[in-house]
Length: 471
Image 1: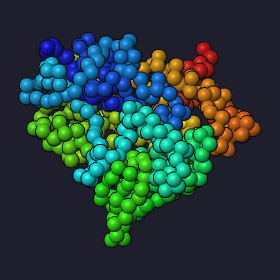
Image 2 (image 1 turned 90 degrees about the vertical axis):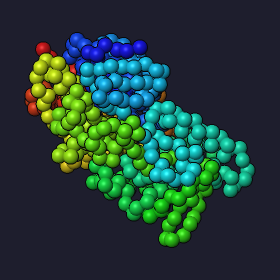
Image 3 (image 1 turned 45 degrees about the vertical axis):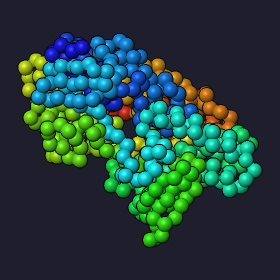
Image 4 (image 1 turned 180 degrees about the horizontal axis):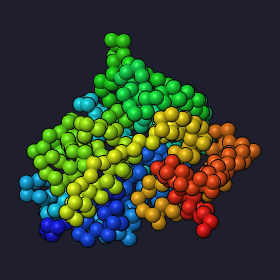
């Protein structure tokens, strides 16, 4: 089956691809829009830790594409891209279908890379999708049940040890989450939380090395040590082999093995291999694009997110960048169809956000002001939830989330181990109320300034949904 040549075909349903499709639809784009993605659900990657822990549920951070696109003009095709023919303006998928296009958007994302480490693909658990988050949760629960049933101390120690390879943002956020979460789960089974061990393994001596979040290094180190069980570090440790129940690594010119019942891999990603075969310039698999996110030799083709690199304006492969690129590509495709010139994309970096444990995070606003603890957690989740890719879904989910936060709904009693006694929970609710009330006052006093300064966080939209301004 072939699609009409006037179609805009979007490959990949991550932030860049999905938001390109939705914003084209919202602009009343009159040509067919086809989104091709191999999975049936959108994985909201920044909030996968909340899906793992149960702080947020699947409908909030792992929704189906058919639900997100139900009220749009986008045709969703669940299939795997097999080949891209730029000269023929065609895309072929695994089912044999061929899609002709007038515009193509490459937003295929990246793949987990294991750096040719023996055993890594077989014995480690990556953490890049909702499916993988759910699989890790089931695996960890199973390990805890096995541990509580064994009387062998060595076997129990292995089952209760979690090794996380890679100390970038994903490794740190996962380590902080598990160092709070696993003691709670194990305590519910009647186990001794002190037996649990979470170990962060890193090749260098520094966490967040070369990352956009590197300025949060000290904050992250304090958080790692301040969990229910402190996270252990193995630094300057080069992983050489992964076994079924252990990690072999080189440290101080010695080969050592860490026995672990769970091994998570957050050490890196690589470009989608399909991109490497395209007859265009690339930088380590990321396609070199113009400031308008077009391929220089194929101006009808756009690339974004992990797939694209602009040498004159390099951007980190983060959700906020991909989100803005998706909106910009939709605008430029529309301009092309109207006979206008595409305009350069201007990415506005508004700071960074990290999860540093259950009910704790840090919001580094404009890379100048750090807001840690529960306020940072609230800002982080409110900001990310505002990026949910459907207005009706967004409104429903953000309202549910705020209600859950204010009234501590859907939180197991054992979460009180985090220090949230009923009195402290009330204080937390009051603090959340203050956080909610402060922008209301700002909006009333200086509505234009409020909108200009905070629109990127999603706070204005959230407030408009929950407390509309007076007319």
